[in-house]
Image (cartoon, rainbow, N blue to C red; front, side, top):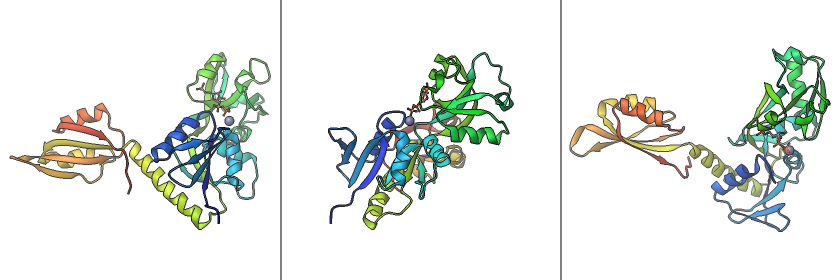
Length: 295
Ligand code: PRP
Ligand code: ZN
């Protein structure tokens, strides 16, 4: 029997591509791409990578064309609202990158004072499902015009009064004389999987990959923090450090009142954090990145 390989769909080029490839790299996977650049093969695990348009990923993963995929929550939710499938792809977990917002935006000279202003207006969007759901939940009836791209030019062309589009830096809206007025949906990268269940062999590859992905994501912000401190300050320091687990306390040679405290801290450690630790009595504070972590 031919070797079973897990097929993962990622975005070919766009908001999610870099983060998706980087995540696989952090999992210790190198992708050698084929000549057409639409297909890649992972060397270290039996995994194939398909490079697709983000909008096509939910469908590929719902069909058996791909087993798993990385897609924006915006695209996944829109597809879920707009298309009825027999066995839609299922969410596995959010991935913490490619954050953006789907926002209603209007010409800069509008003095926007609430959803009611959109009543009877024409709103251009590539996300009619999410836009209509938001309007409905705000009790507003408006005319939603679906456009595949270049939504931001619709008001200038008088095709629409307002738009509902993806915003990350806000530069596109700004360049087109628009301002964001309300957030419809907050999005980040999402790992999805085929809902029909895998063969035992594929499930094993999937489980191994998930262990690595979970490990990478938990260690991403995690730091190993070391410091010296008065024995009496242990409780206050442990309580103060965000997301820290049971610390290791070590005696300091020749100094019975002081200890070394070592701990894994699961959230970002900022300069403010260090200054606060000093106030609590800590000295010689070291913050080290954690490369890998597995529970
Ligand atoms: C969105 C949106 C804008 C841009 C906004 O497109 O339609 O063009 O991003 O980004 P900014 O706020 O940083 O200027 P997207 O990348 O989702 O393109 P796609 O529809 O082709 O996937
Ligand atoms: Zn797209």
